[in-house]
Length: 104
Length: 88
Image (cartoon, rainbow over all chains, first blue to last red):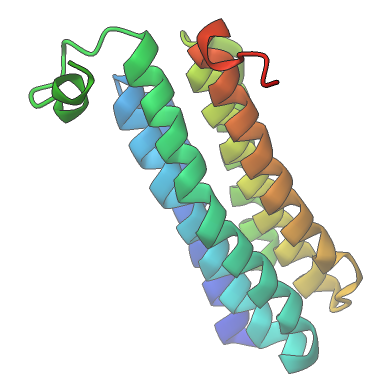
């Protein structure tokens, strides 16, 4: 087991833990989305690089494919989720609410 | 050392599961599913690296796309009937 690969995978796990902690402890919905939408893909990318070291070049094509698929699609999904939340729930705790001015 | 990585991903998935059960809003639950899906992807990556066989790596791209589609379906559901008009 290449030490660099396992170290990177451990780092990915730790970043995933931070994402989980962010999901648990952050007060508002928006803050939780921010933590989840940003930290969890980073944790997968770091673990994928670590696994790429370990698995060699032939099978890291799968990792690159899934990393590209996730990096392209996840922010769009989280963005839609943010819009859905701001459309339905009250967002008065926001200091600056750009979306509200758009809808008028 | 990679066993600790699998444990970290499992705990992240459990945090997502907790938020799924407790989450005040429906959107929180959708986000919790997304987080646990991605920690599942990380766990699959670490597991295939530990066993050194890349057979089930193809699941990663499938989970990424399915998770994205599920999130979008969830947001359409959240926004309510106004967005689900009958498209002739």
